[in-house]
Length: 188
Image (cartoon, rainbow, N blue to C red; front, side, top):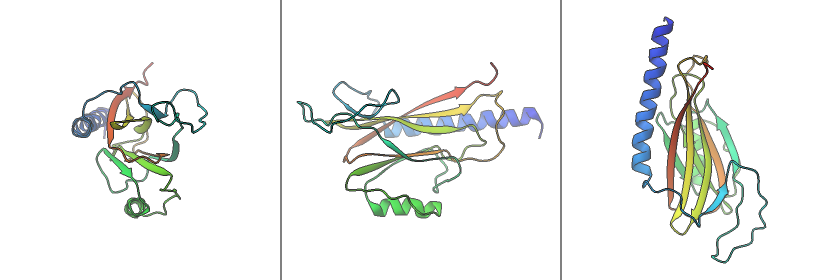
């Protein structure tokens, strides 16, 4: 296959991901932005220490999320962008049964697991990351970023399945996922 055909293939693949991600974002997210008063469990800024104390409104002070898995080689049986909230050991084992592996140990009495899967990607260079989760009286807002390689990026020619799985302090939700898409440039 010549270079022009590969470029078209990558561009069409990214357009398909953008369309699917846009539809999922539209259907999963209520369109609301984070509001003041939400308690961040994780922020990509500097780490914060948590005393576990509650403030005057009864919200727990910020705590960091812990990454359980970052991968681009496990499909978990999903070929499209998918967000999952896992509250029980049974749900956790069912997810890993689809992947054909042993699940990492998680204490589901203390933690909720958030899963962001980009689905089938046409090459290397794609990624998905849970960037922030904020809890408040109306539930948990989860900000997810997906990136794709630009047209001049040299990437491995293999199908990938980007995934990011994290755990946050136990919460019942409801959960509202917001997906932001971006392309990085390699021609500069």
